[in-house]
Length: 240
Length: 240
DNA sequence: GGCAAAAGTAATGTAGACAATATGTATTAC
DNA sequence: GTAATACATATTGTCTACATTACTTTTGCC
Image (cartoon, rainbow over all chains, first blue to last red):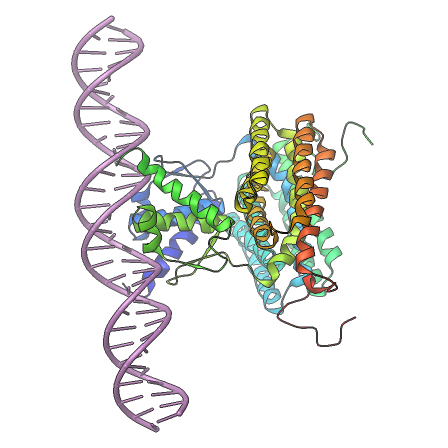
């Protein structure tokens, strides 16, 4: 095989990830091994290895003798997401400000440029993928192998949720998208300055903006708050 | 093949996990595909799938064309572990108290019985594995797919660190082991009572106990600083 | 006419053989 | 004597073919 044979496998894995993130492959969709193997020009064994890998990363779910399906999103997904996201985002962003290297900061700046470009292009999928990449780089800056697994899992469903609800034709959301992009610039400034507290606070603010957008679609009018108290939040029933 | 052919694969995966957790397979050790395939009586393709799966779970690290090795523990591992563990443990335990089902509580009680038995037996590996299982069940009780990945990753290295430092012949540590087991009983009580705050506080206390044990080995007498300092870079200026 | 059981079909799971890459060693040249 | 290159060996990566499991459809019986 040529030298690109090896890269065909990683191309396949990367493309599957992208198609799942953008909901081109919808949650719960069954994945046919022979079909995918033919598409990417590889045989079934290496494809099966990729599916196992993606299962470990949380992109797909495997069932014995019943094939693979894109990781489903159940009714509990959003609720669990709202519980875990602020904690993990704040923690990893704080660590990123403490540990970021110049090389990583340069990559983050490049990513932000690409993100702005995707917004301008109006391509929702491209914007979602660039946003995911931006926050993945921040996760890599945190350089903590114990927090990265949950961050990756969060970014998968955050991206998919965004692709579900964010409607490019809803022009009234354009200012919010701009605000998100501006916050990305702030991320870069604070991380470059090593401002851990500031970065963590911005992560929370960035989360709140996204959360508000999501809730505006999920809870149309009333339903004020039921989506779950964050771990560490004061207990509703008044105990000490 | 018989009906147990399928289970041979899961037996292989489970055994590899156990051997890694107990350091029977040491961090950084290279894994030979043909050797492992022969040991478990399967061929290389399914074994390679298992290795991919274990890589996704954080047990092993894969390198292109260079095989698999048991996930290494570097100088940064302990430091990153100390940062992430209290946060994830507290959050998942709190959620466990909120969401545990009677069936899960029954499993947790059984696990605690096995844990006590392992302590009595004096088998360090069995005790470590039962402890890992106990905390995995608590993680499953939390029922949050976004926090579970980091919890699994933490438990892997927590177990390995414990196997590294906990010396059964050090009789002076027996009371601490008893204290840990007693805390497990408290976990059961608080989770069964649905006391989220209490469970979270206990998780922190449980962590502090474990942390103190670990630090007593890492910083034997007077070295107060080394955990946060890069072991590769000895402090040039005569430190404080 | 409906339900259940059996056979057929299509998928996943596995095995053995082949190709390509990396590593270690030996030889040769400087 | 040392270093670099080439070759040999061992290990990883891949493919085709086969076994097994699950699902679907059809047929027979109630």
